[in-house]
Length: 373
Ligand SMILES: NC(=O)c1ccc[n+]([C@@H]2O[C@H](COP(=O)([O-])OP(=O)(O)OC[C@H]3O[C@@H](n4cnc5c(N)ncnc54)[C@H](O)[C@@H]3O)[C@@H](O)[C@H]2O)c1
Image 1 (cartoon, rainbow, N blue to C red):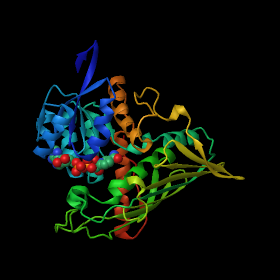
Image 2 (tube, rainbow, N blue to C red; image 1 turned 135 degrees about the horizontal axis):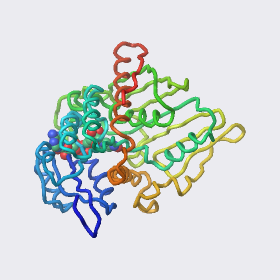
Image 3 (tube, helix red, strand yellow; image 1 turned 180 degrees about the vertical axis):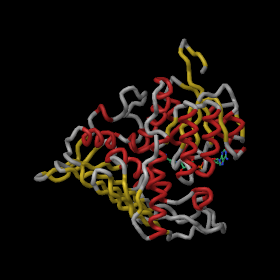
Image 4 (cartoon, rainbow, N blue to C red; image 1 turned 180 degrees about the horizontal axis):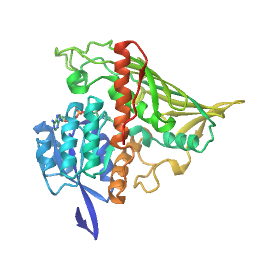
């Protein structure tokens, strides 16, 4: 770490400087005086050069493994295509770097297991970028649930409907690079926060489907068609006996909503129901017998983690809570504690997502293992 005004600053490098790094991680880092952006890596030299000048970061490489060898980097954020995460995360952990990695952590639970073990065994902070855990109404819903206000949780329900163009998704539409489509891109977040809220999922019955061929790029050029799902669903049984139902699609016409789409995640407890919606993350819907679901403002203490440097009044609410991912990663490093959600959480979500694919392939219910700690 470098010493600045008497305090050590965490030296962070971004590996993969595409969309999510620009949208979540660099703005989050820019808010936090405990860290500085010291290096960038991307396989695309032109993009790398552009980001280097935009973000004022002179040190760059196109080789993630070279970056993992740099001794003046303390922590890395991995935001590259899914097939590259495992090798980079394992190399970074072995080099003693703290690692935040994008979801899905890998292409399969086997890969993710190796990432988790490398990070655990080398004693580095490891974090999975499960963004929606940081939404204010999600944090408030969790608190209501854990404090018993909703009673005994019985049902969990998640809908994630996007109205995306039917043109090529680039690397995201090829199995070898992405693993799966909507299931690994979108539904895996909802599997993760369901486990966080309701506890382990014991068995699932799942299905995926592909409707859009995606054999044209945005500018009309022919490309190899999509190999992955654009719709995914599962029914799940939690260890507690509660039930869960999830559906995700990128083909829901009329659900654009300024790009945020429709997201609804709900818990029905024995005493009441609570609903989180992405497009209005500072409001929760609450209801109970005799009083229908109605909007309630999320209390100030849940708009952001207490010590997050973010001003919740600034920026689009459905965007800015994503900056708290970086706050959590840096806080875990400074406080020498595990980050939440960790690679272990990423592994448990991956085990369930893999089980959805297995269930669909076998046309049968599948038991989902819980990862060993
Ligand atoms: N947490 C979230 O809400 C969220 C949102 C979007 C994307 N993601 C995840 O983030 C990751 C990146 O997604 P994106 O939308 O930013 O994709 P992107 O295609 O915009 O960016 C990926 C970048 O990685 C670079 N790259 C490819 N291979 C590389 C390699 N071997 N080494 C270094 N750089 C390499 C590409 O050149 C590109 O610039 C994916 O895993 C995706 O699932 C998560």
